[in-house]
Length: 132
Image 1 (cartoon, rainbow, N blue to C red):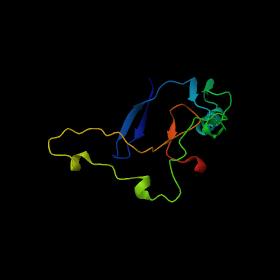
Image 2: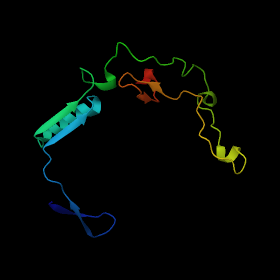
Image 3: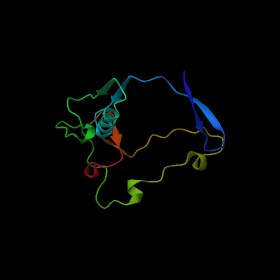
Image 4: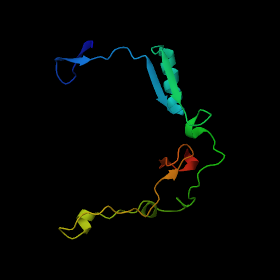
């Protein structure tokens, strides 16, 4: 395998780094904004024999494409006039609040912190829909 020497920024010595042979094929997962930009950049570089883009839907655009049948999400995640204390209440600290010697338990949160997005089942975001 060929190698190149790169100058280390931490030291004034050269560090040999193995360079793999020519990569002929590349895959891009997802045809959203990042996938589209990556595809365009790789096509312009003209460095690969084959570029394959995988997208689960029949249209590109990812979460920016309107989904006529969105996943139901709770509409009461944020209410007008709520304070930061009700939106993001302090979480209990098991190290501080529990008796010494007690095992630490992972507490199940009672607050909904994420919303479902229309892109993939189970994909969530902490940005509310009206700001997306």
